[in-house]
Image: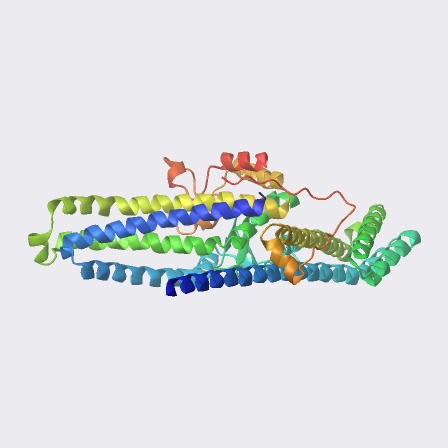
Length: 185
Length: 297
């Protein structure tokens, strides 16, 4: 009698421990997604702050290129007023492509190219651009991991019970850097 | 199966190697205990505890001070935003990709192409790249090298190597105790109770065990290099650039200064010139094999 009771208690304990561990795993994965998202926001803000400086510097050498300045400024404002994820992704792509045309225009001005301040800003902007790409990659990796664990049995039961739903990926127009297939020994 | 799972498999294999170490230590302790203690378990245990305490103290010192020692031995100086903007931006970007805090960033005054990572965990990590690498590698290749180092940091390789060093040190100490005991003579127990077979096994073990332990340590180190290449490829999404960086190092062929046997295992590619029996006694896998695997990804 006592042994049966003991076995039942052990089984209940094991199930409970598994439940807690599985629940905590979802919380950790979810937090990783929000951290990655915060990182994207930090880098987007950084780029937002760099742009006025860049426009001022370029204006000093290429006053007449008004069209490209208005485009960049408009894209910058659009990005900051975007709130949802698809909106942000779209505005971000827009800003990236207008910046590309700004730098293409700048190519025609050798004096500008030699300007110390411009060179520094260019490095900072391309650095920020690649950080945004890395942050997006980290975000999408986290979402993939999370979504997979909400779908795979038996974790899917916990996910359903506590309302851990699927999350959206941060999509982009640019050719996505291909996920590498790695073969470990 | 995705790359993250495969990296876990690789970690498991590394821990399996540590398990092998433990077996060697238990065997040593048992045989030596038989010889000196005539099978008395308390003497066996005392033996192992003393050796364990000594090697743990040594390892703790290297665990907490090792990064500073490695940086100062290699004469590393902190990178600054004015001269190394691209380098700093790459490290920051890859830290974001790896979802770890940005490591401290250093430059090594050396014309060879190389780099290393150190620090006991991602919160206390440092990354150092040689001036030669900053000069001779293009942006993508430099990013590949940094991605490899970020892989070491993310995979907690310093922690694993520290555990390995504890175990190798423990084996060396036990063997040393034994040989000294043989030379200076043990207690009277030995002559009465010990079996000559154990004596012979003991001598052979005392000589072989430290060598085997050293070989296992090197095997783990090489495994971690492959793992860091793979993690670097996942983080940077550009295994080709990493392979190109290795090709440049191979062509360049300059030996890294300020690298010693003690710090060799930290580096991106082996800083010491290839010698006889290179493969088995090297901290790094052959460069050609690394290139081959990266190009197959």
